[in-house]
Length: 193
Image (tube, rainbow, N blue to C red; front, top):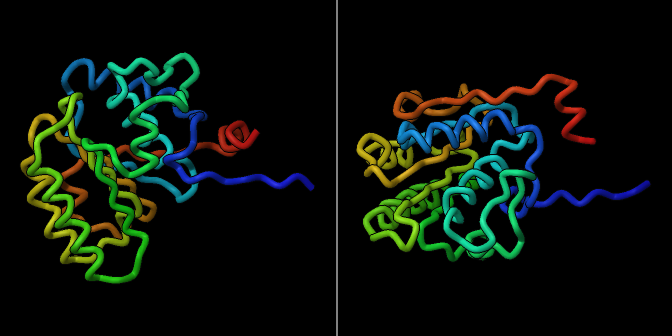
């Protein structure tokens, strides 16, 4: 039996079956109607984080030599933004993966976001915060995040990945535009193939 290596979302160079979402997001962004806080909700494992990383790469690499390929919905492995995001060194990108159990770590991560937001941008003039597994944020970290979600600057965008709508704080949900991601069984089979 052939083994399959599953790469982390940030390392996925190809995006499958998110064409309509990607095109809609580009249209919103091009028309200056892109929401500052986006909530991507759906079952765990359907590629929400991969989609977010791809769209973030599209935004951050727009003026780069090896920019995002819309023809193939793919990230060029030589793309500077891709490399710096993979190395956790991109000055305009901040990741919170709340897939941890220590409550003090959760609030510390939110404090780090607030520090990140207070700094000036580098080159592309936008800041992006990706919060993965947002349903794991506790009440204290959720409350600390609210002020940033309520009053983001024009050039700041939050991508919040939610795998379980029942656990996510209603106050966070109310500050975001929610996109519910769903694929039929046939679409899931096409993605796997």
